Length: 42
Image (cartoon, rainbow, N blue to C red):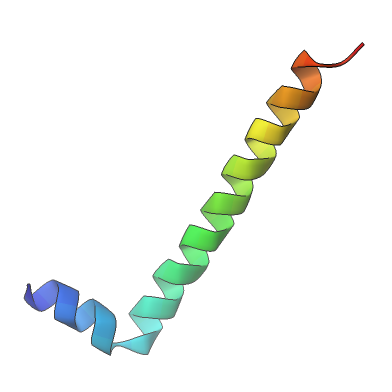
């Protein structure tokens, strides 16, 4: 649990992983969006 406490107490680690999660979320969203649009194209 020491690693979890370190993660929450250190803002650099926290914001780095938060930013990484946001970027990965956007990438996953656009990948699914692209696949959906390709499948439903005329």
